[in-house]
Amino acid sequence: MIYGKLPLTHKFGFIHQFTFSMPSLSDQLKSLGVQVGAKDLKPPPATNPYSIERVLNGRILSTSLGDTYVVESRYPLDYTQGTSLLWTDQPLNLLASWAQDERINDLAPQAFAFLDTETTGLSGGTGTYAFLIGVGRIQSGEFYLTQFFMRDPVYEPGQLAALEEFIAPCSALVTFNGKSFDMPLLHTRYLSHGWTPPFSDQAHIDLLHLARRLWRDRLPSRTLPNLELQILGTTRTEEDVPGWMIPQIFFDYLRSGDARPLKSIFYHNAMDVLSLAALLSHIINMLAEPLNGQVEHSLDIIAMAKLFEEQGFTDLAIQLYLQGIDIGLPEEAAINTMLRLATIHKRQENFAKAIPLWEQAAKQQQLHAHVELAKYYEHRAQNFQQAIFWTESALSVVNDPNFPKHEKPFWKSELEHRLKRLHRKHHG
Image (cartoon, rainbow, N blue to C red; front, top):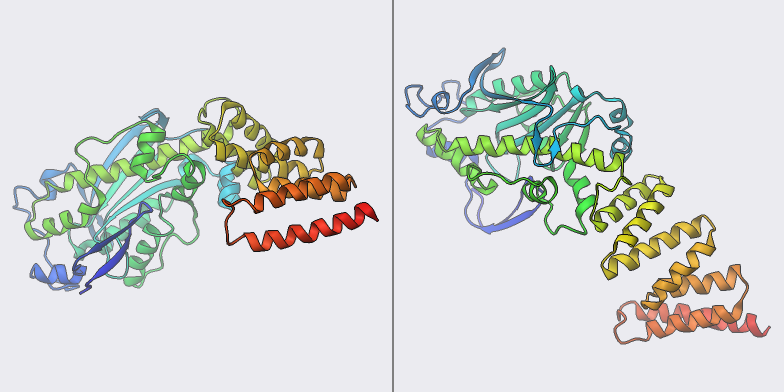
């Protein structure tokens, strides 16, 4: 039993903290009168008028390790989730570069598996089960979504075996916070049965990390439902259920055998998987043709520019920085963009373009710009009078009452030392 204040890491990438008593899955099962791990553990009776077989249109899938219940849906490849298709034919080179896995660049659409889990707890660990695992992949010209449901813990071996068989043709996983949540949990479940997890050789694209890179400056929340709304332009129906309610709904099902409330969980999981595919398609299109004008928000353009710059596509990054500035940016973002552009020009020794940007930033009391101008005039132009001017100007920024107090001693000492050296050079 776990008591007190417990931090919970939700799979969508945000932190909740509650004060409550949270029984483990074993405790929950024992309270239902079942013996955890026993061979004679029985599922809810099939005669129940609201059994899973009667509530959801699925089938029992037999494996060599037992049965699992699967619900299958198929979508044409021209199906749109909001404004985005489930797949795009654009090249994957930048995605591969960002993921640091060049295998992605050569993958066919059929190689990708889009995976999301619904679990008995939000903190993971050996006592947490993935009772519903949704996986989508492209097969025979359609997007084939299969949801593997663990009707009871005794059926977990069959569920995991069926999942392994389904993803066997795929060589890349796409998840949302899967590197921190879904995949460690599934690894634990396979290992608990003494099996080797089937994911170790697959490339992995975690869209939470990429979404943070692209929309951190514009969107306060980068949860998958919020990205659906803000980026894909779609909303979920009232059939959806909040993620924090999902574990309890499953426990209630184990107790009663009434599968009707599970319909909302299956809907929630299906939307997650479809949105994974649509969001990846949207991002690939953004990065494949960044200058075509489809990305309208200036902060999104700057975010793309940073990504291209870090991946070594400097000329393209410069064009995007300039495009973002032309459209218009919030003051702080505009200043930071000018400084980033100036730094690129400095690396390229193109000071004719760097200096005007530093001068613009200096007007906004940016210390970095004053220092860079002082360095340029001292070391490059050998114009000590101008170097003294910019150093004294930098000191005035440091002496401003609004300058951060913890940085003031360092910069004051640094600039005063520079000023003494410049005066000696100027009068020497």
